Length: 161
Image (cartoon, rainbow, N blue to C red; front, top):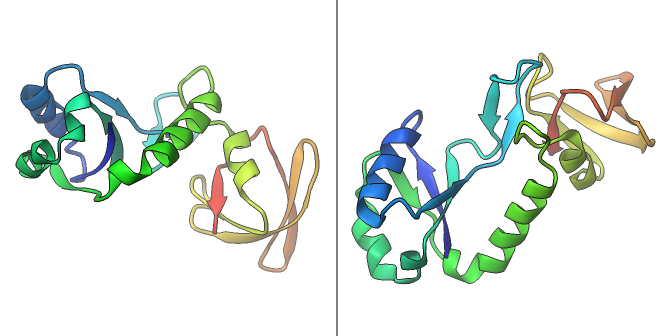
């Protein structure tokens, strides 16, 4: 069963080590990554401090109750058991849209956005924009009072706002 854990900032390796001690090395981890710049090493977790963890023993709620004090863990999201289909679908979509470096490509983001978006990287980070048109290779947007075209192949990523 997949669970979602919120990890303390910069303590993923501690959390992973502790969870592997408790459940063995069979625990699988997944967090979708995005490129923050043009360098391959400059990546970030799309979900911030959240990570998906999979192990068969997570089906037993008692195992999670006793695991909530693992070093590096803030908390486990509740009701993951009821959301397994959604979690599996999300992970599958993410994996289908990963490039050769294991990072999500722009297609992942452009498919989700319908009217407004928010940049997540580059000098434009945190700016909100409105979509006025979608072309095959470009996205036409308005930022403030300016109309701009963004290539769908660029390394500028955005999410729905």
